Amino acid sequence: MGVDNGGSMVKAVIFDELGSEIAASSARLAMLTPQAGFTERDMDELWRINCQVIREALRLAGDIRIAGVACSGHGKGLYLWGRDDKPCGAGIVSTDSRASIYPQQWAADGTAERVFAKTFQQILACQPVSLLRWLKDQRPELIANIKWIFAVKDFIRFKLTGEAFAELTDYSGSNLFNVRDGGFDRELLAEFGIDELYDALPPLKQSTDFCGAVSERAARETGLAPGTPLAGGMFDIDACAIAMNIVNQDHVCVIAGTWSINEYIARAPVLDKSVMMNSLYCLPGYYLIEECSPTSASNFAWFVDMFMGEEKRAAEQLKVNVFDHCCALAQKVEPDDSAIVFLPYLFGSNYDPQAKACLIGVDSHHSRGQIIRAVLEGIVFCHRVHLEKLLAQRSHTDAVRLAGGAANSPFWAQMFADVFKLPVDIVATRELGALGCAMAAAVAAGVYRDLPQAAAQMAKIKCRIEPDPSRSEIYERKFARYQRVAGALAPLWADVKAPA
Image (tube, rainbow, N blue to C red; front, side, top):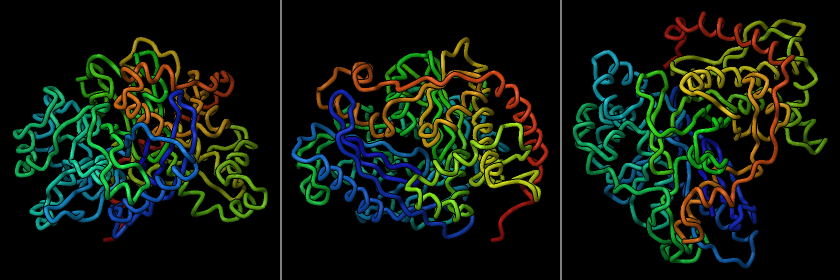
């Protein structure tokens, strides 16, 4: 079983040893936004919903034995466990921008430059390091109560087993971790002014390591058999990559979900600061080279929820998915029929957490289909901004492997191929995060020797989409316009703040 806690959904999926899906259950997670820039989650409610989807997946699967379980989840953010054995405040989701002042301060005072020699990554407002410093300054009573510092999937594993561990793929992307030396570093935390929290960092584990077993209490709440082994699991971007059979350096992986994730694996990190993140991949000996921002398919979901009421009703009558219905409207519009530009900055831009989403160039003659197309294009263009930084580091790229909501739409996936001017591979399963951590569970349970062997058996490519050269030429011009608009507006974001 793979249990995947993303930015908006939790999913429990059961697979057989060849990667075929047996049963799945999912539920939407409520987002708490107590004030501008805050995106939070009630941790007790989060656990309750995890229990719910696990029980439902087991019910749907029928009379089977679960050989092992692993969890994946969104990276960054912060989930704290208190000394009173309760959640320590609300869980903080990776779209949170409250701590944006700290990366700016650390860049200005030289801290960012000093720590880069150990962390190999830029500092983001949504990383645990920034959020912990914000809590120290704004909520010191919470800091005093912290027992464990968790990523979301490590919190869920802790609730399943009662044992606290820190899995490497998540923590190596937190700026709390010395990526150069492969461990936690008290001196690194001191650079950020939070060295008193060193002992709250749990013991480190690899993705496929045994990390405890389902406790009696968790068994009663989830329906899992007590004693079922738990693997370390992994950051969801690692889980998606290994589920796409990313076991060498031939491909780039693009995940269009809550975040725009763009990545590849390499034997050596990129240390010229031209990319955003280097972290440890779930395969020993590899680094995950990443460009990311909270600018992807969640912008489309928000747009549909906010403005597409008529389309929702029409989709219900047609008995189709509302997102598929909206994509069908956009597909009726040719790429050169509109010059509308959408900047997908609901939760900040590629590098500025204060940036805001906007539609530029709308007038009275534009149709809903044209506006929807602009939203889809803007998301793909933002991915391309990241992709170009990655491709500059590579001698060749065979194809892009695409996951996330966009991979479920042939129209949108074709747009990625046309904008990228590269073939796009679609993987057979829709639940890549869950499949990736199910692979880790299979290794921990002894079904497979290691993750490459598991991926060879469990990961399958469904199809390859080739770029259309004629459309690529049109998108090249539209991408240039997108970049001009983004560049022109960049100096304004500091003046366009939400009211306190």
